[in-house]
Amino acid sequence: MLRIISWNVNGLRAVYRKGFLDWLNAEQPTILCVQETKASEEQIPEDLKEIPGFFVYFTSAEKKGYSGVGSFSKLMPDSIKRGFGIKKFDIEGRVLTADYGKFILFNVYFPNGKISKERLKYKMAFYEEFLAHITSLRQSGKKIVICGDVNTAHKEIDLARPKENSKVSGFLPEERAWIDKLIDRGFVDTFRFFNKDGGQYTWWDLKTRARARNVGWRIDYFFITDNLRRNLKNAFIMKDVMGSDHCPLGIDIAF
Image 1 (cartoon, rainbow, N blue to C red):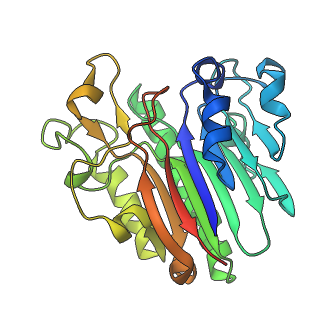
Image 2 (cartoon, rainbow, N blue to C red; image 1 turned 45 degrees about the horizontal axis):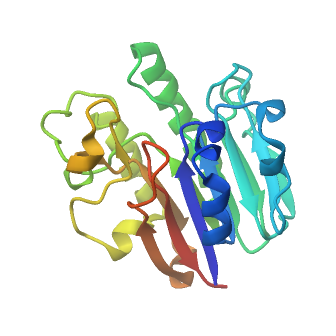
C-alpha cells in the first residue's frame, strides 16, 4: 500500500520553522508532494534536501519567493520531469512529474486567478494546456495520479459560501467547468469517490481567521485515471494539521 500526501505549505521555509520535519518523520508517507514552496533550491534548508529514506526533488520559479513545488519520495522514480514543455508556464515552477513505472504522478501548483484578469487568462490557459498534456498520456493507456492545489472549488458543496463567491476567481463557472471536463475525460475526484459530505475543506483565509469557524474551500485535490479506480483504497483530508493556510490531503493506493 502506498500513501501519497499533498500539501500546499504556503512557504516551505516557513512551515519548516513550524515543525515540518517532525511531522514528516512521524507521518512517514510513501510520497509527499508540496506546493507553493516559495524558495529557489539554494534557499531551501539543507536538512530538507537530505532526509534519510527519501529521494527529494524540487522545481522553482524564476521569480524569487514565488510558486514552486517539491516531492519527497521513498520510491526512486524512473524519471523526474520539471514543467511540461511550455516556457511561459514552466518558468513559474509549477509542475513536477515523477514516472514510477506503474503510474505517473503529477505534483502541480495551479495558478491563482484572483489577482487580475490577466492572471485569470493565464490560469485558464494553463488549465487547457495541462489538460491536453494529460489527456494524451491517458489515451496512450498510462495510469496517472494528479495532486496539488487546483485553486478552484468544484461544486457548491466544496466551499462554505458559494453564493457570495459565485463571481470570484476560484469559483467562476469557467473554472468549475474545467474540472467537469477533467472528470469527463476519465479522471476521478478521489475524495468525492469516498465522501459526499459538505463542510470538508482544504483552505481557509488567514486574514479572517476562517479556519476556526470552518469557513473554507476545498481547492486541493487528488485525481486519478479511471484505470486506477480499483487500486484506490482511501482518500482523506488532514484538517487538523496546522502550519499553513491549507491542510494536507492524501490517498492510499495499492498495486
